[in-house]
Image (cartoon, rainbow over all chains, first blue to last red):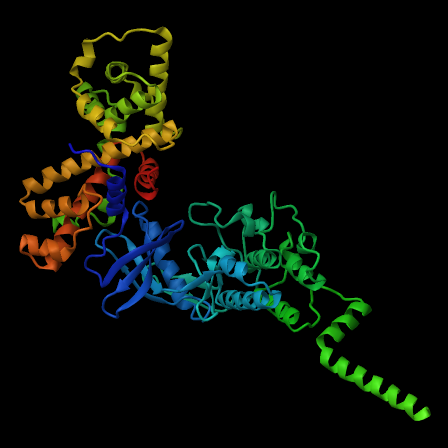
Length: 342
Length: 251
């Protein structure tokens, strides 16, 4: 028997674990990353001569249940036709039994990387508003993402914002059903945010701790406000450059406690989205989107009641040009009155 | 069905538990137990030997005695039958047993008796020693990582040998040759050989080279998973070991 070097072992491991693309129109380029259910590869579509991202079920998870989940994930994304959601091109099965789906390959940077390079709060809030709009769209179609975090949000080369990794997304039970035979999704708009949805089939709690709502961390029923909490945590990260340090899901420092230069209104929006009790949060991602829009436009937000001084200050700040014009007029007027008297 | 493609779907899952050596080691039938023991021995003796040499700084003679003694006692007392997959992986269990065995031997300062059961264990210690000489010792590894790495090496070496046998006996010598040149080429410094060059060398077209290589790799993948199923006792353990074997960078 010939000795195998460490490099050769790594190579053989890749040979075994990499998917077998033979018989498909795709050629593997490189692995982009791996998640709970599978790995994502950059592949080349030889027929259309373009690069695609291809998500493939992990080799050792070839149970019918995981195959079904993977297929359902592809179907969920395919149904969500929105500029903020990466479109699915194709679904199939490799010769080795692994299910895959291909999607647009997005060039750009993750939101956390983007935040490191963009310093203005306005720019960050604009990107965040796009995220909220995408999530609100998904909610309107009965889908809860359940794993929103900066690492799952991409800023494309043209500044477009894309929400990725719908791998653990859930369809709200009373808004969508899956025909087990045809595996076809039938979606209708949700009636309320009180729709209960179950855990994963194996009962495990899934998501990312810092960005996970208390009810999700406790493994309780979740609804669209679970995503609102995670959006609030993403906003927290964008305002403070740090993830909320949630240790026991009981409390965390407010954004203003981390950085006193953050406005009270932005602080309040973030804290309302991240309220520990879901009934105290925004009722929907759409409501949060509205408040973020108001922050950007220097309008009053629903999460914070201003006093008269703050209202005046914001009014002045918002209409700075008009105020300066009036002031200039008044100064000139006084000047003329004084010179006429002399 | 083409045997090359017969690895997908349900066939690829953890096989019936009676195929697992870890399960068969508990059999009431002595012959079944011995065959199961042999499967475990083939997979683990070499990592065990290297581990004793590396962690316990044993001389090659002492390491030989300890490995033979360990597996002989394990067979005699049926140590492996008490393994509980709910507590740890079999690999961890075996390493823990090995540590306890070596530690006890050192404490009691006993010289293991040669002969007896250990004579039945025909192990190629010379090759293990040669491999140790080839290995880099500069890496900072924990004992667990070292044992795991050597287990992976032993595992893949066995799988490659089985692949050689299977492809040779099924008139697929060209597939084997292509796999050896493309995937087992030892010359790390040389440029990776292209499919076009292989096609020229074997008087084939590039598509055939691609298909032949894919076929050999599929067979190799099948062997790896079959062998892994042999030395795991539950579907969960099989999955965990597969992740550990295939899904992580070797340290």
